[in-house]
Length: 209
Image 1 (cartoon, helix red, strand yellow):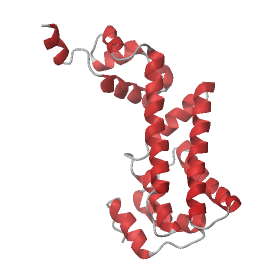
Image 2 (cartoon, rainbow, N blue to C red; image 1 turned 180 degrees about the vertical axis):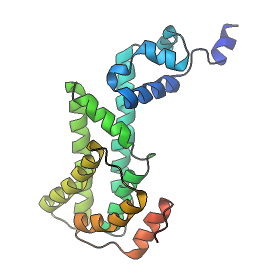
Image 3 (cartoon, helix red, strand yellow; image 1 turned 180 degrees about the horizontal axis):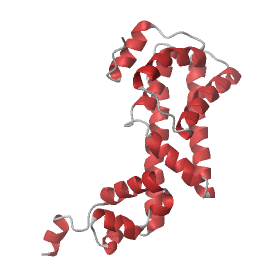
């Protein structure tokens, strides 16, 4: 009988609790990520939480781990993806800004907001920023820039995008796609080739006029 109740999902799942915490964080900030409100959101008992997490702190740590793996991990991977040119490499990184499966901008904003009230999370954000910048610097250096030039171009690339996120900027997809070749040219000092742009647009289901 007990096993049947477990199988029926009466306790929920670890991923279910984590997803509820993620949604609460995005909607209302970290102060809303508390066990009882999450239990109500999931229509589960408060005690069922403890089958999956020791306490709220462990849940918050799992949220940060998810953010770190998704946003920082994927950005580093895209910066290291195969590319025949620097402009193609930069377009690989730009995939992050257009594909929520690679980089979750609302999650990024929520974690950076959380960092305003937690020194520990602020340190997490600083480490993430450094890791991402170092990945971009390596990318530029791979295509021939010296360390100083690579550092400046990496910072220009990254800080503009963080500005987009911090300002919660909203752009029509057609307008953003129209601007991308100019961004690439500014960041890399090179103009992207037509076939590179065509592959990039196709990846994101966009057809330019």
